[in-house]
Length: 166
Image (spheres, rainbow, N blue to C red):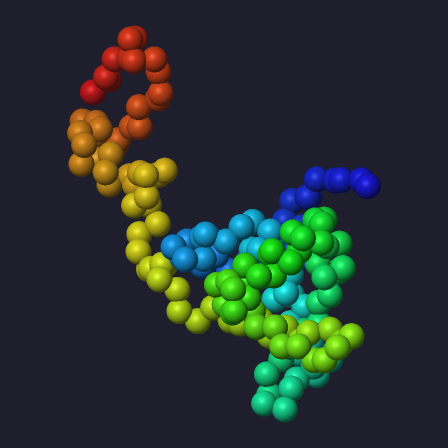
């Protein structure tokens, strides 16, 4: 396999798996394992193909077929882990992002992938209010303002030799 740099404004030409932000921020969905989140993203991607191929049941709901062997191959995991990841997403034993409907002995189950409609995470909240980042306004309010009206963010130094430059 060969890797190259992106050139200038060249768009990324790769295909991507999209993961909803709610999987990372919603308190309930955050508990899912990384494998479960990736599998959900792969299933969402397969839903597009199912819609194109008219895999729609009598109620008008789109479904996918996804065998355990395919899940093992996609996630590079063993059979037991593939079952655990499915159960983590399932409505019966898990969080409810997918619903598996058995189609009879020897046939694959239909998998209905649910859309995340309502998340408990408030996306309209200020993204800078977490502990990792601090907005510029907080620096201004804490006395980092210079005489000319601009402000400076102090550089990290060792505490023993750190001097404030006001």
